[in-house]
Image 1: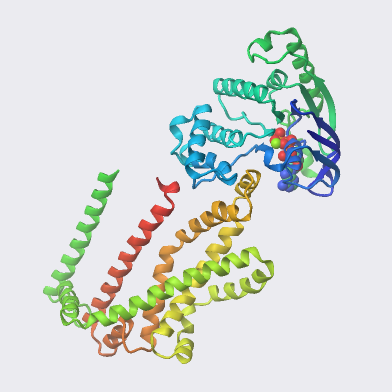
Image 2: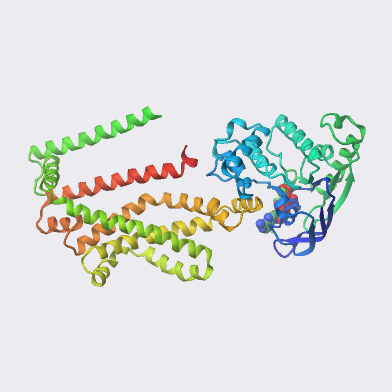
Length: 259
Length: 253
Ligand SMILES: Nc1ncnc2c1ncn2[C@@H]1O[C@H](COP(=O)(O)OP(=O)(O)OP(=O)(O)O)[C@@H](O)[C@H]1O
Ligand SMILES: [Mg+2]
């Protein structure tokens, strides 16, 4: 479905990521983890074609129109209501206005925002906006879903139910997913494979974990399985290696000022 | 909130009435010379007289015609130029310095030139209004397009939107927000252009009447005309405000 070979991405002279190989087979759910600023978002943007690689190549087996993309700092059109934001993608795909709106309301309901269709984004909370964005993308019934920390700003409960819904949706529709997340347990619980991107600059893949838990998965049950805990622990250790010691502990030395 | 608003309006009206009464009283006591500062009642009478004579209508028509035409053409012209400059780089390289220069100078100094070129008729007043408004609108649209939130552009692109959808869903609404922000200023500018143009050389219009009042040292008529211009501009401000609240309801609701 998606095949990334020897990918290099740079903003300035020094590459952010280098020599990244990553394949995602059809129907696979792959999570991408890694320290903050290592280039996860950059990688996802490259797959979507929003940013050109400086080396290497990306092969896609789907049309651009069949890819759903959820940005990390997603923005809704401020001058459109939640419903019309969701309807926009459907309208672009040629659906009539009434049809698109009706379908949009259905999707808003499925992310728990049935009563908020007439609100403008300014009148929604951060988490509600995020859910509108999720509805906006799912409404297009993508075959490949690229998600950049989709649930980061949601409370634990909503997050759990949305993840559960998404999981059953993905399993039911046989969707292919590449998701960036900072939540290791979430990564293990939903993925077939977790890929660790090392510290940047010149970040590359530092580890891969196959998650052999049976599908369909029950988000609560899966966490009780012994394999879950061991894999999560391994991810934790591997990620700790990559994350630099938090700078809060490293007070700047006063002598440095005099240099 | 509405009640608070009502109270605010009432307090303002009361303050204005108080000032006018005080002014009237000072005049009645003979503390100021009515030749320089005629009492409000005299100014009111003068305004009424203008309408009773019917004299004022052709002047109002001239000024309004010039101002509204200049406003309309200036908004359209500025929007078009701004769009083109924002989308086509070489055009921006040519236009931006010219517009920046026009923006820096007090554009009313062009009035004599327009009168030489276009005569003392309405055309020179429209031109002055236009040049005042077009520069303002150009920058509103140009900056509006260049400062468009790139996240919105990417969002619409990833939803499958082409250039036309981008224009309709992202660029035009962003630009409308910017233009609305300067619409009231544009209305003021349009009237400035028309009245100043008439003031310099004309045969009708509120500016012409002002010039006449000034040359005959008629403070009463001068005040009356100032009040008239004020009232009409405030009226247009109200309309512009209503339009703004409607078009930007996603911001104000
Ligand atoms: N537009 C840009 N111009 C220059 N540098 C950038 C730009 N965007 C990102 N970077 C840099 O590229 C690196 C990777 O950024 P990226 O957003 O891909 O990180 P990330 O892995 O998604 O981090 P996080 O987990 O915090 O979201 C960072 O060091 C960042 O400073
Ligand atoms: Mg990121």
